Length: 395
Image (cartoon, rainbow, N blue to C red):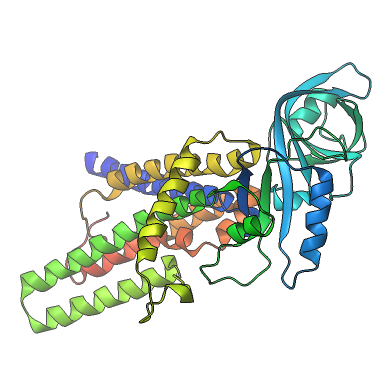
């Protein structure tokens, strides 16, 4: 009886490991910046709508124009419903440019619509008792705005286009480079030099890099553990047939790993050493990355940045759960039988399918993630192959 409970406990832990890993993967999707953008914050001062219009005209004349939005945030701003009976305090994002460059929302507000706005779903509830508030009017300072859309992914937020001569604090630019990728030329720094901007580049995309790395550590550990097991077989047996068999297994699992969890690494042409290379570049690059990291950790996070940072911390939480469950399920190396492996793989795929149905918005992206579908099948397949032709037991 105790043995059966142990088997069920390990199976449950394996299932929870997969669920936590899948949730961490969905949070990783959220850390990706919309349209692969860059962010620059002015060191002092702010732009005006007139300056944005001038910069936009200059960009249109370039061969490969950059797309950008100027924006700033005001905290704890009060807005009022149409009948002046309900109020809500929000963070107001005033901008000049297409909202799609900044917000991860299905609704958008174009750069010329200074009489419209976007509000978050929770704010719509506070003001109108419903999220069906498109077309309703609100009072924002001296401005009367018509709601053009409801934001589902941000809480306590109002998004508006800045007016000419208004008091908007446009101290940040979010930039989408229009040139070619794969070079050391930094689009953000080129943009700053082009317009004489004194500011700092905020490396918000680090959150995505860290999340991808965290998610990748678990399957990588699985692979290394399997390869170590096969290598021990070679060393212990000392026979040519066993060695060839084990090397073939190592190669096969490596190929399966690259297919299921593989990632591509691209090296910019400027980084390829030549006889004219200046290797001082690497020292300068290290110092620059260190400064960017300190800036990212120490800066005050505004709503658009929290939209990237919060999923990263959720990813850390879910991956911690995945590691704990993995240790409970597979702490000791136990070979599995063919029947147990097939049952575990089918159960894993059922769990993934259920999670995809429950996640809805992230479900389509989760469905395309081979790593989620192959996490437990990869582990169980490796344990089954390692046990051939020895007597096996579940987990």
